[in-house]
Length: 390
Figure 1 (cartoon, rainbow, N blue to C red):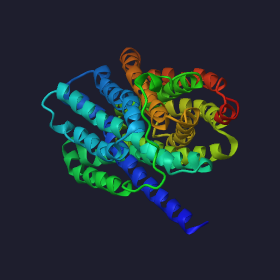
Figure 2 (figure 1 turned 90 degrees about the vertical axis):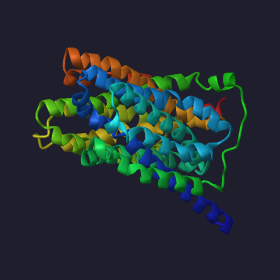
Figure 3 (figure 1 turned 180 degrees about the vertical axis):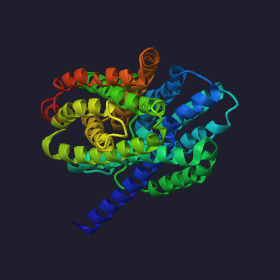
Figure 4 (figure 1 turned 45 degrees about the horizontal axis):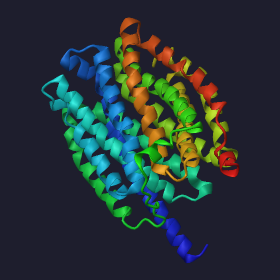
């Protein structure tokens, strides 16, 4: 390796490290919401469905807006968007404990969602630019897994600080934004700036991309439903103290699963990993729903479920990028944002099912969505086959 190549590789690693850190911080702020749902429900005297609507708002805003910011990121301003996103996300979330009314809670959650929507597509486009083709799965997995680790940090932080202690986290967000701004100043292989019409961007969502997106929505429904409903189940059993640790266990294992899935997909292909991860997830998730922390296998199952389900997520993002190599940020936003946004909106239905039956039943219904998700993966072509035979 030449000196120039080593410098470029070192620069790429620094950018990846900065953006991975930002992803961890951003998603840890987002993850503050779920463990606080029972407290918010008690504080404002609302139903489970109304409280679950906060998850829908967060997912809808942070996810459904991502394609718009992805198109913006494909054209310009990636550095600015990646730097400011975590700060806006934090400023929306840390004031939940001081909201005078439930409507203000909804507004704050929406503001936080905007910050997350701003950050993700710009950041993943910069990560993609710094990775070689043979490392795309690994780089995307490292970036994705950092965010998943944030989903573990968030619940623990919320448990320790409570609603009123969240403002102490603001300096963390400020420092993170400064690090991203500094590290991405002279990123070596900059993403080429392209200018297209909105109609051209819309054409990204066609063919196998639509199938991949539908698979991602169904997969996300099962994941978000468990993360959202497990708190109500544990509290009802008098085991609410296990909520933070359970979510943290799931998320930490998910981070490892993302790295494992990404690396394996670099070697054996994207589609085999997408299919096998769903097959392995279904029985583990069902067993987890019917387990409690009093069972010794509860936490091992939570970890195993996290590994299995998250092995799918970064691979689906890389697959989307390779389906649309000229619109990396937009394609990434569709898989990181549009899928989670749609799934988040469906949480309203999940919440209604929980109110009329039970949170446990709602989780099982959601997990059953992995069956049609598996069927959809059977229709997906390997991205390399499309590249080789346009």
